[in-house]
Image (cartoon, rainbow, N blue to C red; front, top):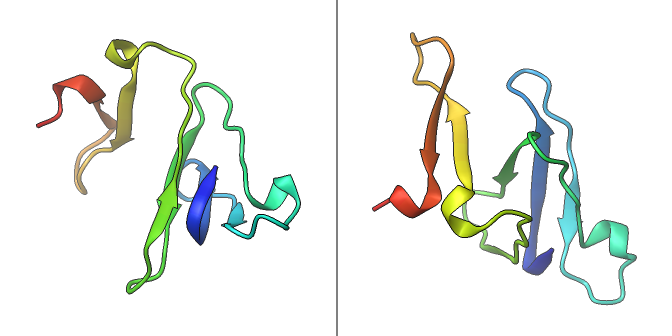
Length: 88
């Protein structure tokens, strides 16, 4: 859910991202302020270079099971996976 500012919560996978523009206007329809992302669907927030965007996330797994997965660095195949609680 977008709390302050606006941005694009892209969903899908590299090369096939779908745009989900979100705004923080409390008078806007819920569909313009909130997105539900199904399990195992990649998502990434995109905002302008000089913009701030505050979102609130609700997850359906315990914190110790939440995994960040992203494409590997260029030149590598596959993805990098890391549990959120292992991040520094």
